[in-house]
Image (tube, rainbow, N blue to C red; front, side, top):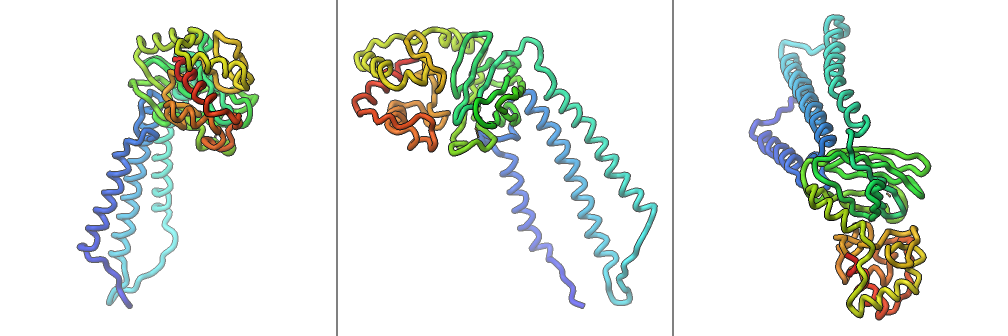
Length: 337
Ligand code: CUA
């Protein structure tokens, strides 16, 4: 009978490759990484994940080692015939009980994590209502009288209680480093909460297929110091800054006499329709088109020229604006800080 064997020399490169893959996977610093937690609840999930990972690793190594050792010890060789045997009550009880004990041990921290992360938000949490739209996110702060879109600002170290809604189809709210995915279901309010632990800018994404631009339905969470957050709120509460530059003034006229007022709010003007994103402070945002494009005059012009070309399926149609109207609108919108 032919025997197979792997020379130890050939095993070494394989092991090195495996180590490299593990190192790359764990050194991940992707802003969408779920294994780099920056809030209390994502850290709880990570702790549980690490526990289960190592328990599974010990089981895997133990089972593989036993399989290799026994196949070597009891292999067929000259003077010895390999044989299949059946039934050993004591062994079967042992290998049934070991997994039962492992699962029971894992169940304790699992239930603890589930209860802690899905229970009520701590007292004094900041209330935010997040609404999913095809294809953008609206954020309302009911206690503060602030409404914004696609960029959610929160203070560091304070719990955020997010009520999740949708006006059309099912979306899903996901900020990988701050909170797990929770669906935004039309007609059925959901909620989640988390306490951001460090300041920073966090990428986020709709995580439930919701149509043409699902992949382009992104948002950002800005975790700021308490002082910076209060300054942001104070500015958001103000009506729009009346334009002073000529081009921006003309832009406001184009805005108020054109189709824009049919869908958008700019507080302090006659524009008061809540169909598209609130634009009172759009110039202050870092991104436009649901965090798809950086907020630059070039990108704003590109968006106004043909929204569905920039974001497929966009509910804002091509308004066939002239280049002159676009330049005026860009000056106006960018002045709305
Ligand atoms: Cu909204 Cu996918």
